[in-house]
Length: 220
Image (cartoon, rainbow, N blue to C red; front, side):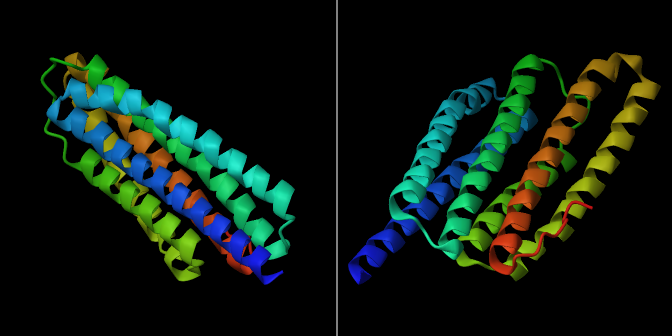
């Protein structure tokens, strides 16, 4: 019995490590997508778009392992919740990667156009979102409720920066109609990052439920 439990614990740990690896790729995708826009590096944007296939495959592979663990190991309640939480987390990670691709496609679309302003707040938003992804996954692996709760304040900060960007770009559009197209694309970028932060907050909520059984709303 103890050897069976040991094998299951090892399989569970491997599953969590794969989720962390997927999360690391998503963090890189977020950074590269936004950096490619800021410096207008189309080659980097293409890396993000092509790399999405790897993340999609990882999601399928991890999903398959989750299902196999449930089917073959018949995990008890606590373990089952941990596996099902991981199952949901990879869905959030895959959607974050999709938003990174959306941003990379905007880099491609704006290629060769001088930016209406140097990007400062958008990279700041992205850095916060990346940190949220990392903290959410660390909280999952370590069952750290307090770390998970810190994502609410970070999400509020992301929302605040997005509101600032929205106002600033709206002013650009009103003062010079020639900026409307590019400013609209930059608003989309801000919105995609804001959605990435929301998905990271979802991970935090899942961690809190996993550990405490409570269902908090960190996006209110």
